[in-house]
Each structure stands twice: as C-alpha cells, then as structure tokens.
Amino acid sequence: MKPASKNILITGVSTGIGYGAAKQFIQRGYTVFGSVRTPDDANRIRAELGESFTPLVFDVTDAEAIAQAAQFLTNHLAGSGLGALINNAGVAIGGPIQDQPMDVFRQHFEVNVLGLVQVTQAFLPLLGARENHPVRPGRIQNISSVNGQVAIPFMGAYVGSKHAVEGLSHSLRRELALFGIKVIIVGPGAVKTPIWGKGTDISRYQNTPYYPAMQWFLKQVESAEARGLSVDYLGKWLVDIHETSRPRIRYALVPNKLMSWTLPRLLPVRAMDWVLGRISGLKPTKH
Image 1 (cartoon, helix red, strand yellow):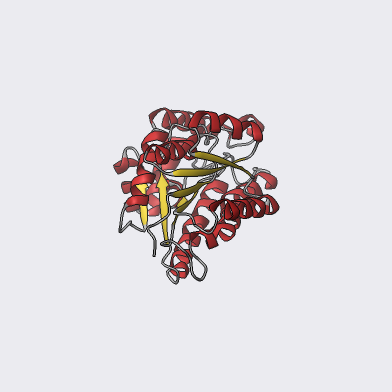
Image 2 (image 1 turned 90 degrees about the vertical axis):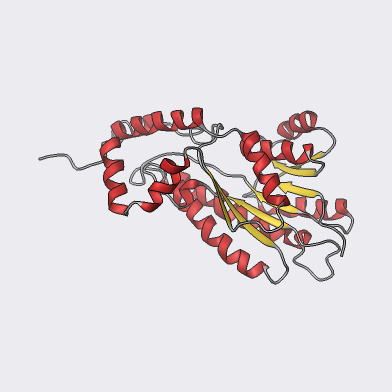
C-alpha cells in the first residue's frame, strides 16, 4: 500500500482555526482543499495561500453542494485519496436557553453536528472507507471545544452541539476501526478568533432577568478572545496531530489549562455551579 496521501480537506477555512490550519499544512508541504461559503472567499484565500490551496464552495448544511464537491474531489484526485478530513466549520451564538430563538438553536445543530456528519459521510470513501483504497487510510480530526465537556452559561446551544460532536466522534472512531481510519477529537479553549462574539447580540435580551449576567458574560468572552491561542499555534498543533503515528483520542488545547480545563472537570458539579453563580450573578434573588 502506498504512503498516506498528502491531500488534506478542511471545512470552514475562510477565517479562524480553519484558515490557520490550511496555512500550516501548506507550509509543511501538503495540498489543502478547503470549504468556503462564497466565491469571493474562495478567490481571496486562493490568492493568499497560493497554488497548494484549492477552494471548495459549499456550506456544510447544503447536502447537494457537499455531494458535488465530493464528486469533484474524487475526479480531481484521480483514484488517490485524502490523508485527512478536519471538520472545523462551526457557529457559536450566545443566549440564555429560555429566550434564545429556536431557529438559532437549530442553526448550531445543523452546522456543528449534522453538517459535520454530512461532510464526513460524503468524503469517507476518499479517506479509505471502501474496498481497494489505493493509499493508507486517512484520519479525521473533529474540532470540538473545551465546552464539549465543560458547560458554561449562555452558550447552551453551542455546548449541546459540541457535546454531541464528542459522543459522535467516539462512536465513529469505533466504527471506522474496520477501515483503519483514526478519529481524533480536538478541543480548543479560547482562541483569538471572533467566533464567540460573531452574531451574539445581547441587546435582544435586555428585557430579560438574564441581561446583567449576560453583560458580565460578554466581557468574559472579549477578555478570553484577547488572551486566547493564536490560529497559527492551533494550526501547527493540527499538523503535528496529523503526523503523530499514535495520536491520542482527545487533545485539550487550552490556555490557562489549570483554571479553564483541569479544575472545572475535577471540582464537583455543584461546586462549579456555586462558583459560576457567584461571579456571574446567576443565583436566586432574596425575597
């Protein structure tokens, strides 16, 4: 069997982690195919990243466009395959579960969960889930989040979708062992990218009891983004993970790891409830 393919597919490369990963893979000699949602983004990123990058214009919620991209890539690779699929595309819009519109809630699951599954199903044959695959099986990296395991208030839709990604990834890993395809969960913490605040308008909750705590929440988000990991740093990690012969099942790439990852998972749940309630104001009012 030939060595693993140097072809990498990354979803959501127009900004953030996806863009940083595409850049780092290209710098290490890979050919990157990346999903973008508009022709303008396709042209811009191709100009920035050069001939080693090929844009695929599709939204992860558009099954027909995904199928067309998979057919294009199958023809383009001419019988070869993909070395990796990195499911990165995602949305994160804050809001209290009680008041967040259902269409926003559905958007999180359509993009972060169902979109991931649609893309994975479409490109699995190129990763080696087929008979007589010409190169060694590829790998899948599913980009989750610290919030896939640590729930914070006002991100319930996002937390729920990333928790689903974690569970799906474990099942998928066990199923794809049949083909030798490894599935790795990558859970970043705060990142210097606007995904958290993008689309989050807390003014719509101004007349709810949650508004004071949401003001606190937004300040924490802005502070975390300012202190977060760079997309280039995360991109390098994703390449390292891909090139590791025996990757871990899950990677937690979290700044201030003790406070943001280790302690929240070690503390009893009610203790975490108390801490978050105290600092955010989410506690019962006295009558």
